[in-house]
Image 1 (spheres, rainbow, N blue to C red):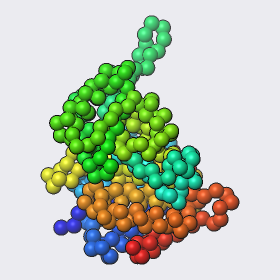
Image 2: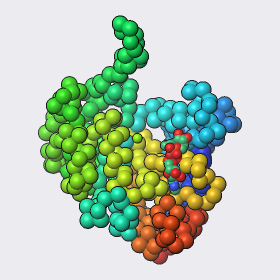
Image 3: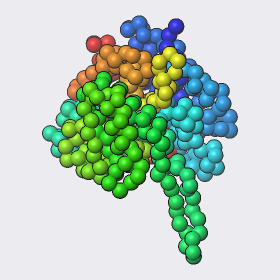
Image 4: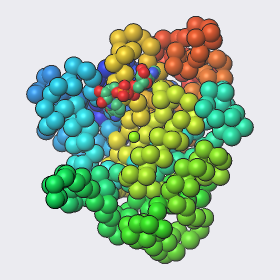
Length: 366
Ligand code: NAI
Ligand code: MG
């Protein structure tokens, strides 16, 4: 039977970019004999409007059943005043939590045609292709105790950075596995100089490396130096492995090496299911972009590249993933640009649909 894919377009520009990706998914079915069992459902504000909850139990159950979930974006000003328990973001958090998606993959890849668009000098980023693997379900964002307490006559805000050995081990394995499919290099970043969790992190990564992945080149770096190196000479890295907090910051930093938010895909992976496929959620890094919603301006490339990641990591279709990435690269090389990829004097942008048309034409020519 065909692999199954649950599509959750969500809010704002989510449905707009997803409409283009659905055309691309259909293209693979029609032209590459790559059929998917596609279903579609609501998440975020769209789900709240219909069901009074940002993720219906039935949708959650479906997400746990399918081989991969592809999500657009959630949120928007319409929902800003809702109670925290039903905010659109909670739909996404519930998916991540119940699917136990502990490994967040954020590629930073610089398409040659956009090298001028980076915040950095062209030669620093041209050809850049790195992957940040961020631990996503533990660490200081979740550690107990937490809270704001009274101490003496003032308030104290408390969070706890906490990692178990098994939490470190599973995300480390995920980084080493990835490295084997890429440049075979992992750089692990923590602050073992000042943090106990950092010392344990480094120890466990070294143990897993020695026992199971000695063929992969491993190095370690303090996360503050890592931030500096990412901006100074990012091409020295292949896979960067790091915790939840440092990964949040380092991945946003790496993102800006390559240009627009409209270009950035991501994947969040969990443990392998019985069929060997990891639980997986693919989504663009960007949000619902209320400022451009409904104007046909959204760049569908981030969502498109997220589907390419699904082809590679959930469906074992690395060659087809590359085909799609090369189609995007060709479109950019031909000068096709949505508004987010050009300056005010750079000519006329294409619409969301126009970008979809161009990618499909490049696929046809591939
Ligand atoms: P945002 O990512 O939605 O937008 C930031 C800026 O980038 C805006 O100017 C937007 O127009 C632009 N932009 C984003 N994606 C684009 C695309 N594909 N093409 C062209 N331009 C694009 O972040 P913001 O404004 O902070 O948040 C807006 C809403 O999205 C909020 O409700 C927020 O909570 C939600 N959000 C949801 C996320 C998710 O679903 N994973 C992630 C981040 C924010
Ligand atoms: Mg962030």
